[in-house]
Amino acid sequence: MRVLLLGLVVMALGVIGDARAQAPAPAPTPAPAPIVGNIYSVTYVEVMPTSKAEAATILRRYRDAASKEGGNLRCEVVQRIDQPHQFAILEIWKDQAAFEAHGKSPNTADTREKIAAIRNAPTDERVHTALSIGPIDAAGGVRGGIFVATHVDVIPPRKDDGVAALKRLGEDSRRGDGNLRFEVVQQVNRQNHFTVVEIWKDAKAVETHSMAAPTREFRDKLASMTGALYDERMYRAID
Image (tube, rainbow, N blue to C red; front, side, top):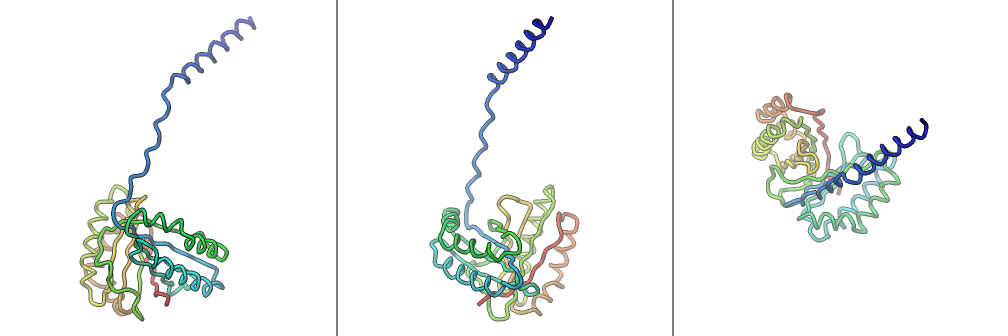
């Protein structure tokens, strides 16, 4: 009896082995599609509050070096107004090749290493393509100018509605009094996530924009499709 059972077990294992041998190999994961057009990178940096001055120096050097690299169209570093140990790096690269070359540059590696030693949280880099933008050479960090960076997350089934609402907001806001720049970009790896980067000539212009009819209309539309808290942060450019 034991011999019979052992034989059945061996036969069963043989059948399983044959089935596995004959099963087709899983299809390889397709390579990500290349990114077409300019790349808009937004990187959030948070360091220890006691290291904010050191971080500003490190990021200033990074900005100056990155601006001289091939394919860089813009590189700005801004410091959060209400939490000055938080920074954002706003960059535009000509194409994917330039962006990837920058990621391997000595300047990038050196900056990552120095920031890692004083960081309060992991650095968060988000890669985007243009959705609604004005001229790339639009005015930058004028003295007293206020940068506003907002992360907008809509639920996936409402992505197209979110795109339409954000495009309309961009077109209306660029005509607003005191607007120096208004750009809406779409995250590459999560198409229902967006970043809005604005520059206004002063705090009064920011306040006026927040009360404008197109802004309030956009916020009303967003309420029915948002996937996360409306995350709006205000900054000033570092010299």
